[in-house]
Length: 282
Image 1 (cartoon, rainbow, N blue to C red):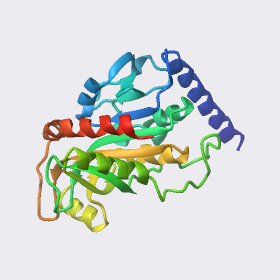
Image 2: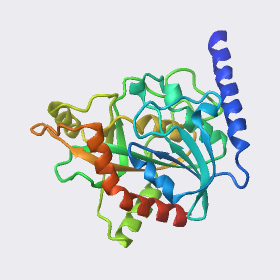
Image 3: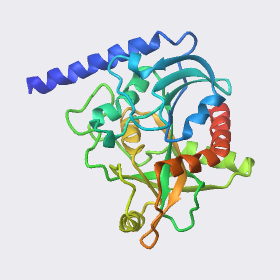
Image 4: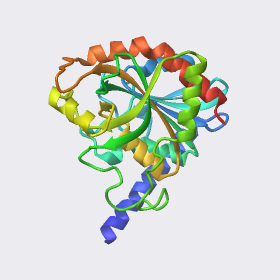
């Protein structure tokens, strides 16, 4: 018991060390939003007026992303007049990181006083009405990762032992994003995202399983981050680009390069939604 308590407080010390390091770069206001950029979504960086960039390698206790398209830096700046902190490169369970490291940045966002989180990703569509390049607003998720990010000693400074997940994705945020899409005449989908470990893309039978279990899209990220964000009371909005489609009778034969290409084609509309959302949401 003493060992577990010691480990917990060592973890708190890591959070404090990392937070204090990053806070030194906030020359003006603290960020209102943290934004996680998924595979291929790095062009959103171009919409931000940067104040400073912090390489992950310089940040105490911060992991490094090993995935193509993730540039390993925090960007502090403004987007549509709001202060934001962009995470250009996320960490995945399939890279070999434990969940505590996959979700480490989310803990730091909370320690920095950030209350709103925008998460983006690329995913495989399993809903028959979806097409490659569709934008899906995530309304809920199904957690199929083999490790839960809250397993172990509860970190009471962040949240309760048994957090409510009935609104993992903030309904007010979701409805607001839908209105923005309508105003700009951007076609969107809304659906449930399933998180799997990866790193393989799913087999046709697995795509069929995902759909039968109630999901509309599947990917290898997001779910652990959202669970930890909600554990500490952050409001979450998530947007996914459908980079391939599959089903029990369809083999998408997809590559990571094709995922990035599909996401790149959808990016102008994603940027429009995110920019207007950050500008107008109260």
